[in-house]
Length: 266
Image 1 (cartoon, helix red, strand yellow):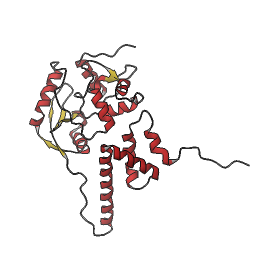
Image 2 (cartoon, helix red, strand yellow):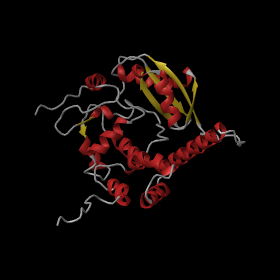
Image 3 (cartoon, helix red, strand yellow):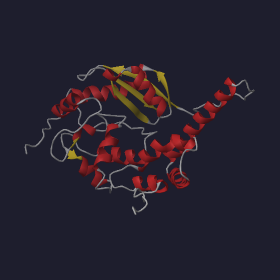
Image 4 (cartoon, helix red, strand yellow):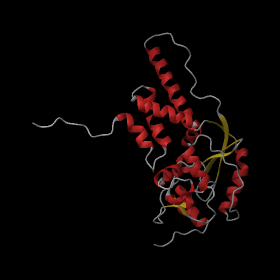
């Protein structure tokens, strides 16, 4: 007689905790991906408990979870409205936004869109991505965008000096509001890479105490909100290939050329 089938997969209850414990993973990425299921109740109890525990320790994910819950609440109200029920005024999805004043400047890389808050420069986007995407990124991080060309003049002046070869170090505060703790750690370590020098994703992973998290480091650098200022272009693969770059590899190559940095020949 054939033995009854016994499933060999890991129980669903252990899924999120197990994935988050993998060495090359940012737990915040796991939590964010699972939040829609959490708010609609389509999740095992142990997974819900893991998200609750993670959010208690991570303000970024706690804020994101509240955002998802507000969306779910709004959709529920809209569903009631379509059924003809009397409903209270729908809640606002965002409150207490920080103001980010933005403008643009020409550069050898094309137009740059730049935003600054009272706490520092908070977003730089290559113009090829479009203004709508730039504004959406600011909104997603909790900023209220206000057009103000004069507000970005200090940042623009230093960037012009950099592109002309007259500046190697930026004297600008950076506002990393709205990024995960892991991404913030990666960006802080990356900001220490000197002008014209190259480090690898593995070097950055080691510097933040997570030597196996090279892939997660690459993902975090792909979310760098202030490229050029936080020089993710100076981070390459261990095989000395360029790796990726949010603005495109042609821009990464151009930035390294400005700094006189060349990839070692292997």
